[in-house]
Amino acid sequence: MTFHVLTAEFIHESNTFKKGETGLSAFAADTLHEGQAAIDRRGAANTELAGFLDVARAEGWRVDHAISAHATPGACVSRAAFDHIAGRICALAEARKDSLDGVLLGLHGSMVPEFTDDGEGELLARLRAILGPDLPIAVTLDLHAMVSPRMVELAQIYVSYKTYPHVDMAATGAHAARLLHGAMAGRHQPATLRAHLPMLDEANGGRTDVPETAALYTDAAAFEAEPGILAVSVNAGFAEADTTILGPTVLVTHDRAVPGAEARAQKIAAGLADRIWAGRGRIANDFLTVEAAAGIALGHDQAQGPLVIADYADNPGAGAYGDSTDLLAALLAAGVGNAVLSPMIDPEAAAELHRHREGEVVTLALGGKNDPAFGGGPLRLTGEIRRLSDGRFRGDGPIMGGIDHSFGTTAVFRVAGIDILIVTEGEQMLDTQQLRAFGIEPEEKAVLALKSMQHFRAAFEPLAARVIVCDSGALATPQAAKRPYRRAIRPIYPLDPEMVREGGR
Image (cartoon, rainbow, N blue to C red; front, side, top):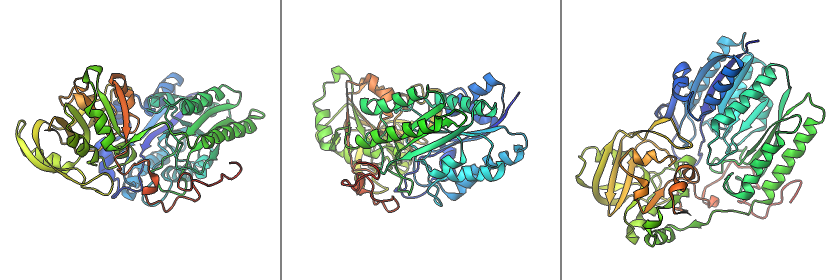
């Protein structure tokens, strides 16, 4: 039998503390493609869609792909953008509802539109209103998902990434697709249960290079080999979203047709949740001040390879502005040379530099223009324009391999031995092509100051002599109490460090 499946990707991680909104133009700047155009661009890369299509081809499905929409993490999604993208998915569902056998969605789990805390739940509710309560729906999620009770009521199957840095997007998509096929064929009757923790996020944000945290994902995968256990997802949560559904979750998709599977699923979820809670104080990162990081950089021996400084707090991948200046100021004050700082998201400065030519010396105000309270205000700097570009590059690393992207209007600006990649469109550091495409060879630099929390490790850690992490005080600072949480249900750890978890310590 040939099954008819509707597929779509709608992915955004929303930082509710960030000013402004994520509109449709932000999706268009990253990924906003419908139907075959999306398949052409994403169907052979490391994406959820690629995993969907691998299974579809193997099983002979008829696929209708609605849309692939992805924007760099940022402020809450505007109603207009949400309604446009969700509308495309729902319109295709309405048009095909009489023949559809299943739905397969690549979502994030931490999308917050301006009108609801639960973007994924809202999309699923709209689909259920069209398709009814019983059609199988399978959903992939980012490892940093927040998951509401509503979500697990509205879709039967959930599969989340098991790696951070995220390198298993296609594999996750294929896993979800296989489970959907089994449900459509009547081989199992899936349902998902949820365990939630009153924490901002897992202590190490789901880092799978930290042994204790990695063990959660290793064990989750092992549980999936048990009878009736179809998928086990450990979602670390997203601390930069102030919502009523904030916090880590464990999801266990199980087969209701297998005797004892639901009870076993409950035990698995509770056990993993208990381990997350027990490890809440075991943080692997040593968060340096920018001054301490600059001091280490000054003494670094380039002959060993580059020193990587991760500007954790100004990570655009967590919705930070990407324009904090405190780390740059510290590097300049210390006299650190042969270095890179990337990216500095400052459209105004990028446009100003494009009014000049390569090789010219220019003075301008750089960075710190969105919210100087988080990470420092603008710096008045004089430097040489080393490269002007339209910002286009194609990734070739573990995360972005084969994906075309653009920083928009881009310039390399050298100030006192530091090459600053000044860009217009936000993106964290994920791939060495984000430097090489603009004439910067990372192996030739003594210091690489990269705005990223963890994803940089996939491409840059293999070439680094050492990696250190600093807290520049920007919007994604690990000092969560600096952010004004108002909607989070209290008590919640670590904002309430002495709290006792209901049902256990």
